[in-house]
Image 1 (cartoon, rainbow, N blue to C red):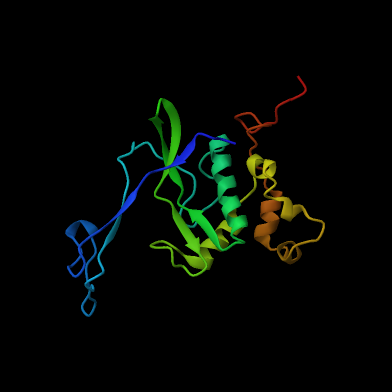
Image 2 (cartoon, helix red, strand yellow):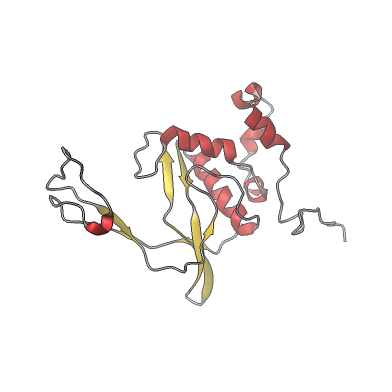
Length: 195
């Protein structure tokens, strides 16, 4: 598990309520809409970051299409952990970050994450059940998920409803070979660990 991962510091900044959104927001009020005296545009403000960004997941894309290494496996295991610990009620999405030096240490800083919740109430980009389902369909456990036994419920002796239904997505997922940074070399061929 990669332990050199942190989440960006941030704060929320709200524009003055009762006024139209600022030009910087890019939001235009339509006829008939109004902003009340306690409402206003809210901004998530983070420190300036490097433009060299590594993206792990998209809004509705949670597969391992971006990179296959310990950092990626750790990020995807974190996503699986959140999904499991919330009983499938919440998933993180659009995970990306950049390397930076903090306190003399190189760390990977995750910034600007999104979430999907059952009620689609966590903010812009929350696709609700559709977003949660996209994670369940796309995620393939890697070595970190397995080491943390996050896939233990999938290997129980009783078949789950998903296993019984045998959808094409499930069959495709079961047939996929994933890259394992512990046992495979950079070309995806297995290493001989007996030497």
